Image 1 (spheres, one colour):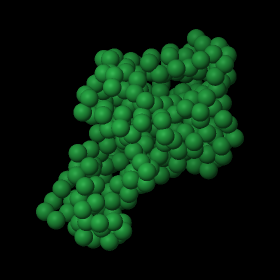
Image 2 (cartoon, rainbow, N blue to C red):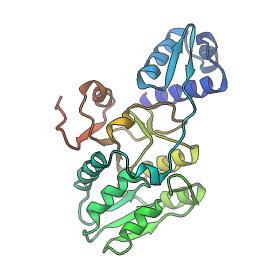
Image 3 (cartoon, rainbow, N blue to C red):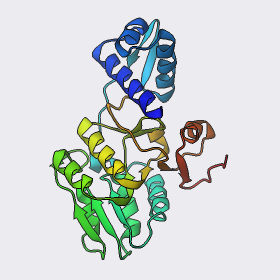
Length: 258
């Protein structure tokens, strides 16, 4: 159920970007009632993905992904805490997938001294960070993204389909309790979806700012019962994740138990 609504919200955002902006037109295009469209638009506005207008809505400016080098200096303290909290989930003897990204880079820094681990990664920086450690590192191939330095595409997905990992640690540009993780391209989203599908547990690393989805163009749905490691402490922003069955792990301030 959650996945179906998440796909519908993504379709509404896509239609808005294509110029379909009136409630009645969206209802026809998505094959739902106008009252459902209005509720969905209210949800998307609360996330910061769209702006409501009289009789419809409009998308915000197209999403622009920043370069990896520029993201390295953003929210460093939060990313360090999130990486450390995520590292505590890794048991000796595990096989894990570590995504490309700046938050996952802090995770692998906490793992460098570990032994008896196998790490699959699509991130060039992640592989280099572990290259001189005792950890066995397997790099999935594919086309390299100039912004994330992560590998995507058919080759990456083929390799990931061949491995069953204990935990898939995923970075993201945005995160949503029903739609999963938001990415700049469909190729990035599809690769992460495959990684999550072939893991016993999916763990998303996201600092508080990423809980406001914005106009991210592509989404990777996640298996039910996934885990979010975050420094967000606002119960109002965390409650939708609890309602969707997402496990929450605090990085910093303790999350209130419910």
